[in-house]
Image (cartoon, rainbow, N blue to C red; front, side, top):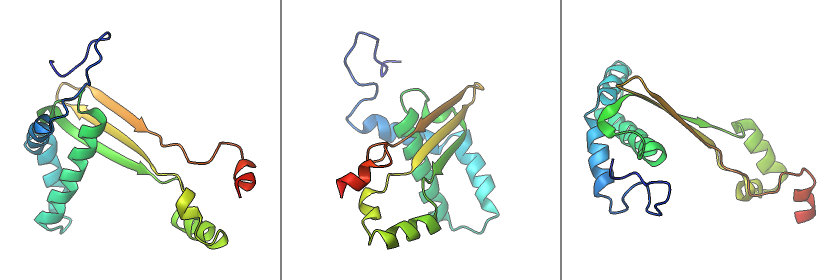
Length: 144
């Protein structure tokens, strides 16, 4: 494909003009994966606006993670998983004992994108976001 860069090329993998992204998202909206999502969410009592928002958010995350590797109309199944680093009870407890400072230093949640293409190829990308504090347990105490 013309969007991919060679090993010695310094051009980005995806065009930055936005038209390619719009074309990719439109192709994904008409893919087999979109049809499967419609069938899956049909019986859950969701409004068409909620389903549309869910699908557009899913396509945006898949494009951001794997847009250079997978064509939009090639999607058969897609799964986006958000891995919370802290549960709700832990977040409330840590926010309480730190007087809200935990929200300033809380690491972002990890995302995993898993895609099955029409050709049977499985593509996975795990986005691990590091925390803002060093890995050592004593380092945050020296910070304060």
